[in-house]
Structures are given as structure tokens and as C-alpha cells.
Amino acid sequence: MEDLFKEHFGTLLATLITGFGGWFFGRRKSNAEASIVEADYESKEIDNGGKIVSMYKEAIDDLGNRYEKKYQEVAAIYDKKIEILEAEIKLQKQIISGLKKENTELKQRIKELESNSTT
Image 1 (cartoon, rainbow, N blue to C red):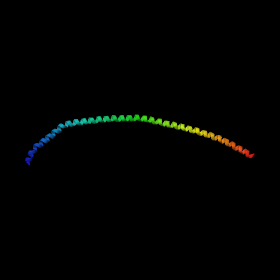
Image 2 (image 1 turned 30 degrees about the vertical axis):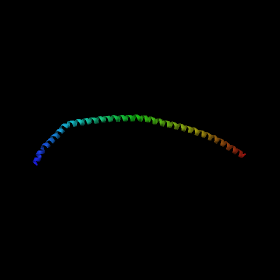
Image 3 (image 1 turned 90 degrees about the vertical axis):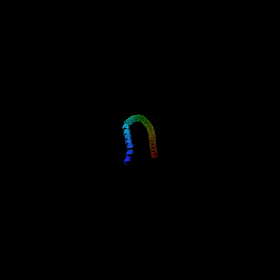
Image 4 (image 1 turned 135 degrees about the horizontal axis):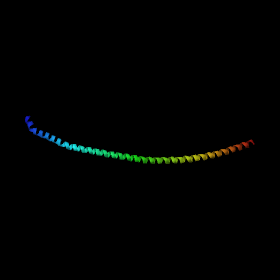
């Protein structure tokens, strides 16, 4: 057992030293890479924020245009409805005038018939 330990002690020691050296010197590289990744993340976050602001601005501008277009459509519909209702009022007034005239004529006819029948 002791022989086995003596044989592989050098390998174990070399492995530990290599691992420690790799960790010690790789630490600096890892920290540098982490700061680059963090800076890249912040850059992307700022870029995304700019895109969101741009999209919001476009939506607000588009909303104003769409509102104006819908307002014009509704105004045109109401104007057309007003024209139709005014035409209907004119028609109803003509009907009333005709009915009044017919009523007057019928009243005269009734009077004529009553005067003829009493005679």
C-alpha cells in the first residue's frame, strides 16, 4: 500500500499543482470575460430600452392618425344621417300637408252631402 502511495504521490502532487495554477491564473481571465459579458448585457439592455421607446413613440403617433381617421369616418356617417333625417322630415311635412288638404276637402264634401240630404 505504501508503495502504491509512493508511486502515485508525484502524479497526485502534479495534478494538484496544475489545478491550482490553472485556477489561479484562469481567475483573471474569467473575471475579464465576466465583465465583458456584463458590459455586453448592459449594452443590449440599453439597446432594447431604446427600441421599446421607439415602438411606444410609433404607437402613440399611429394612435393619433387612427383616431383622426375614425373621427372623420364617424363625422361623415353623422352628416349623412342628418341629411337622411332632414329628407324624411321634409317628406313627412309633405304628407301632413296632403292629409290636411284631403281632410279639408272631405269636410267640405260632408257639409255638401249633409246640406243635400236635408233638402
